[in-house]
Every structure is written in structure tokens, then in C-alpha cells.
Length: 278
Image 1 (cartoon, rainbow, N blue to C red):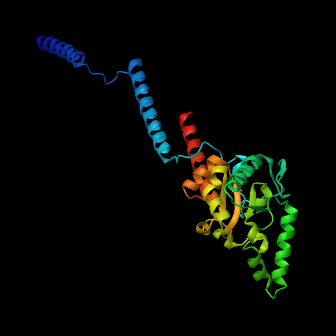
Image 2 (cartoon, rainbow, N blue to C red; image 1 turned 135 degrees about the vertical axis):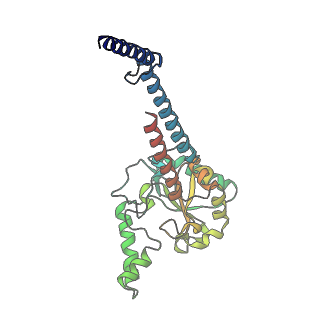
């Protein structure tokens, strides 16, 4: 009986030692904790993945940018005035008085005079009909035209509709900016001061349509943009936006509303890129 107990004890000892040896040789790390090197490698890997993802997002955003002049929608010469973007008050600027007595923003005077001089050198006649209008004058013009239609047996709704076909609601007229000029042919001046659609057929109009952009001006309300802008076609209304902007808009057949929309989208994309780059 004693002999059996000793043998059993020896066998248990051998089994225990054998098990320990096998556990050690197997390299089992069930209870092992990650080493500092392992932690560091994982962090680096995650960081690299994050950086690559961010870079991919930035590249996708950059692909959405539309190439335009390096300008901002907050630039003074790109102010957008329409029914959706009315002016609350008169715009403050240094006035320039042209030879006709009409007023413009002094910052556009040099380009305006250069444009007229270039045309006149080619035998093109101009009459500068209307420039800057303060809020009060626009209000007076609107009311005069409105009451004229109302007194001509039109209802209030009809008078309002007829008035706003060509007269901007006070606060929504570009003439309040000092950046707009109504230009016509002297031969038409006796007909509503020359501000008639037929102006488009004159040599003066054709010269302006072909050359105005070189001096920073655009035809603000062209006939093919009536579904985009809220003013009907005006063959005589020119707006200063700056030479680079005007040439880009003319080359891409863009109304000011369309150009501003492109610039705003670009600015939003660049803001996203800036946030991702931080």
C-alpha cells in the first residue's frame, strides 16, 4: 500500500513538470499583455489610415472646385442686388460725376471713361442715360410708373405687375450701387430716353456687347437669362464687375447670379478643405 502511494506521488510530479514544460515551450501568451512596442505600432497604423482617409476626402473636394478668377463674393464690385438680395439703405461710396451729369462710383470711373473713349475712337456714339439712383429716387420712379398704370384703368395687381416689368422695387435696383449704367444711342434718345429693346440693333449696342467685358462691364439682364434673373431683358443696362470677372462671365455665358453661385460653392468647399486640414 505504501509502495502504491509513493509511485502515484512520483507520477503526479512527473505529469506536473511535463505540463509546465509544455506550457512554456508552446509560447502560450493567453495571459500576456501588449508590449509598449505593440501599442505604438497600432497607434501609428491608425494614424496613417486616418491621414490617408482625410487626404482622399480633400482630393475629392478639390476635384469639385470650379476654376475661376481669384476673387471673393464679398468684393465690392461683386455685390449682388436683386429681389432676393435687397439693399436696406443707400450704398456709401465716393461719387464720380460724368460729363452727362450722371453719377457713378468713383472706383469704376477710369474703366467707364476708357470704354466710351475706345468706342468713340471707332466712331461709335454713346449717350449715358442713367447712373446712380438713391433709394428715394428709385422709390419716386416706382411710384410714378405704378400710379400711371393704375390711372390707365388697370387694377392694383395689374399696375404692380406692369410696373415691375422694368422698374425695380426700391432696394432691389442695381442703380443704387453706383455700379450700373444705362447706355443708349443718341439717335434713340427721343424714344423713352433711348431705353428701348430696339437699342440692341444699333452699332452702339453691338460694340458694347463685343467690348464691354474688356473694360469690366457686363450686359446685366440678357435675353437668354430671364429664367434665372428676376428682371426682364434690358438691352441697355450695363453693370461693372471688374475686368477679370467680366471676361470670365462673358466667356462662359454667365449671369451675375450664376457666377456668384459658383463662387459661393467654391468658398464652401474651401472651408471644408480647411477644416479637414486642421
